[in-house]
Structures are given as structure tokens and as C-alpha cells.
Length: 413
Image (cartoon, rainbow, N blue to C red; front, side, top):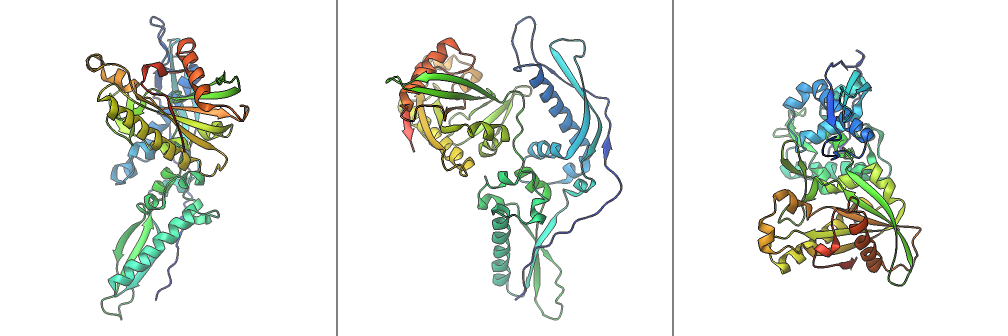
């Protein structure tokens, strides 16, 4: 029996970095003087978004041929987003003559390491040869399992680490999901003396592993965190973080396990890998301050009261599953659900609403309970008191009003 092995070859290419200089600017309008409406929290957030847009353009230019010919299960938008971690540049900002618009240009754009140019090339992780198909399949499965185990283990081998961005993010994915990114190809057998022998080569694409291990980048204020102090019905004090995911994210209508993000510029939507979104370092850092986290499940005004109340509950449990998975390393974090159920608008009122307004009834909202809270705090009454007060006094920081929904049921898991 042939001994399976992992192969990794570092390709040394000393020809300097790959450069790109562009005279183009990416501009974003962060506010409107007439309407006083703000697309971004502040000018800094707008500048970061413009820089990100420009970085993505540069990545598309640097990897133009590779992206054109690369066929992947991953969305190319995610791949481009991940590859922005590989470049360095100097940035220049300008208001472009409009105080409410900021533009960014990147100069001296180059890869941090010239070897990154080969990130799209397949890397062989093992090979099996046998005249028996059953043996080939068995050995191939073993190599797959060993590679995935190494990928998600505590001590990841260096040759695998070199293909990752943030190793901790890979561990958010299941072994079945990761196995999808190991490919097989029949190759010519070197054992010509044994008739009928066939060989299978197993390989991965580093660009896919790099993308899978990269956090979702936050764009324009995708997460708003507001600290509030509250009391439960017995007067015990609690400190909360109201964590509101940007309004372009919401549950897909009628679905129990799909969160989508709407691109307001193109009016198109696409599903979001929310477990990966939860793995973003900025969000992880915020969660480290918490002892408990409550996810809010809700449903819009369409459909029957019974069906939509159940839909809100199932969405709550799905969020609990995702959060528990994203933070499974944090053994002390308790996760609860809060089902608000169906929105109170009647069927006739609901039909008059735009799709955008109905989408806003299915927002993504989390509430963190910090370690400064009373250990005996009654979570349900503390949340209800805080949210009811905020809906009146700080509606900009709480996009939904709990009184607009039929339920307020805490679900302990």
C-alpha cells in the first residue's frame, strides 16, 4: 500500500513586486446638506469605505487573468474582498470640492509578497495509486480527513498556515464544508509495470482557503453598538450593548435560515455567510466584553399570526445556533433567544408597504449583557424595559419597536 503524504512546494520567484498605479478615485457621499440624511456615521467611516472600494478595484486589476479563468464554489466578490489583505499601498484622500463627498486614490499598490501571485495555483496535498477503485476511494477519503483535521486542529502545520489568512476563522466551518474544497484529478500512473493501476492526485487552491479564513470586512458602519444601562422589574441593574447590524442585512422573506444583504446601488441581494460575519475581529472583540448575548428573532407583517410567530421563533433558534458555533471557544458565553414574532400591521396595511419597509421588519439585532451587570438580573424584564425606553428616546439606535410585534418571549437554550 502506498504511503500517503502531504506535499507543499514553495515557489520562489524573485522578480519584484507586482505594481499598479491608478489615477482613478473612488468616491462616496457620506451626507446630504439639504435633506440632512447621512449614509455613514461619520467622515472617517466614509473614507474607510472609499478606500475599501478602491482596494478591491486594484485587486481585480492585479489578478485580472486569474479571476477571469478561476471557477470556484466561492463568490468572486468574497475572493476579491479577501485578497485585499495581500496588498499594500499609499492612500490619498480628497473632498473633491464637495464637503459631503470624500474620494480616495491609492498609489504604489503592490503585493506584500511576490509569492502571492501564485495563490490561484493548485497545491497538491496527496496522491494514491492502486488498480482497485475501492482502495483508491478509501485512501482518498483518508487523505481528505487527515487534511481537514490538520486544518482545524490546534497545531496547524506550517505548510497549511501559509495558505491561510486568519486560522481561527477556518475553525468556524464544519469539516464537511471544508472537505468541499479538496479536489481530485486522475493522473498518469508511474507504476507502468502493474496493469490497470490508476493514480489520483488530491489538491487544494490556496486562494479558496485564504478566502475561507478571511473575516468578512465591515463596510459602512455595518455594526452599530450602543451601551445602555437598565433595570429589571426588581430594580437590579444591567449594562447592555445594543448591537444593530446595518439595515442592508435582513432575513430573506419567507426563509428560516437565510440572511441576505441588499446592495442599494444595484438593488440586488445576495445570501450572507453569517457565521463568518460573526467571526470578524471587531465583533469578536465586542463579544469578549459580554457574559451573555441575546439574539432577536422577528417576522414581518405578511402571513398568518401563527405562521409568522413560529417563523420568528425558528429564526431565533437559527441565530442561536450560528452564534454558539461562532463562539464555541468561549465556554463562558451564554446565548439566549428573544422571539418578537409577527409584526402587528394588519394584512390590509401590510399590502400597502414597500418591500424596503417590510424588509426593515426583519432586521438582525443582538443584545449583549456585559460582565458589569447584576448576576441575578432578570434578562427578560431588563431587555423589555431597555428596548421600550430606547424605542421612544433613541430610535436611531434601535431600529425596531418591540411594541410593534406580537410577542416578547425569551428562549433559554
